[in-house]
Length: 171
Image 1 (cartoon, rainbow, N blue to C red):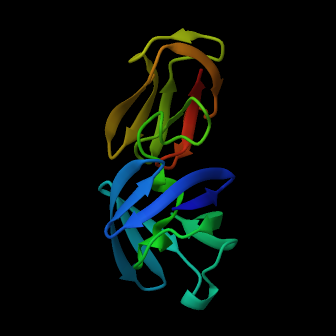
Image 2: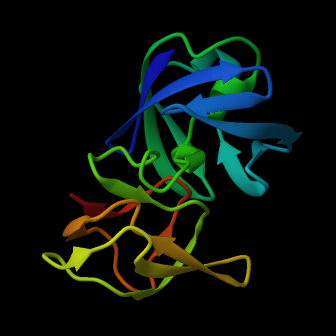
């Protein structure tokens, strides 16, 4: 298992063949090499990932995911095979557990924030809609994973978010 930090967020990552385990959640991964980049498909969503040449792939390397720049750092061993290159922002997973912040609610899929339904300090119950995320021309409700209080809303309406990106913190 490796501790992977991307864009200031830390994840526990392990590669098991064509599955990447992120913070205890399994994600099927497929890779397709294209000219100058790799298409990484995670949970059915494709991402354009630009990586350094093989000899330059090391902790602290610069990558681009869907043309957005990131620095990827890791400590430990992720696993065998080509999948470790897939460590990227899309690796979040389940709404609460995939988010790196305690109580964080993460995007299950990359998309655009359509509307925010809560404010910091507001009490929520498990299943309450926190925000609406548009992805693949579908409206996705991002719901509270547990009863609590909204500590912070980390995104704005209209913002584009990556899969696994923390959107709201509920404590």
